[in-house]
Image 1 (cartoon, rainbow, N blue to C red):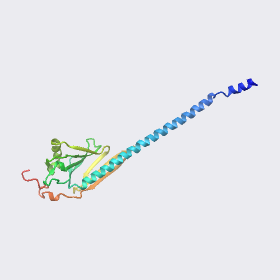
Image 2: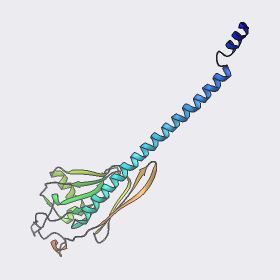
Image 3: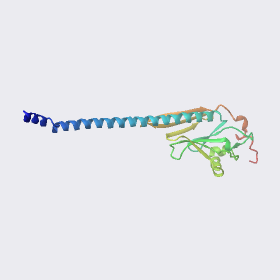
Image 4: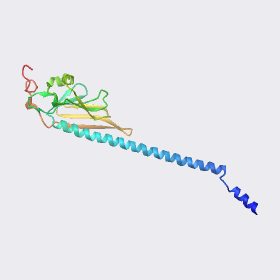
Length: 211
């Protein structure tokens, strides 16, 4: 009787090869499913974080550009893809000083929306110099310019100013979670510097005949 029980216990002592193979296959399927779920959750988290970052930058850029344009007194077309804004005659000298100018443009690759200004610069430039591009070149050569990145990752940026010089429109694309969407920032100047300009020349009154 004892020998029979020993045989039964030996037969039940471990898994068969088939049972081991089945167990390994089940474990493999479970581990694969867990890894896939972990990757999917991580990818979704990264995509959500990227979208959140882009949307926050977009909101900040929209508010910054809108406020800047609305409170400026004059806008100018500039060479290339950009415009210049005269924020106002802060020192009442009737001139467009470097510290009163802000340029809206892009980086060399056209993949970032930038602001350029010249804090503390008292050198003046004319409207003609701004529109020809020489004013910006002169200011950059004599002072420390400051670049502010509004949107660090964008494509197909187009910055336009209407014929009246009062409506600023910025078009660009943003890629979020591998999906590219088009966006627009628009603003209108609420102020006018017509009273500061000489009707005959279109230049500020502060420019005398000898300037």
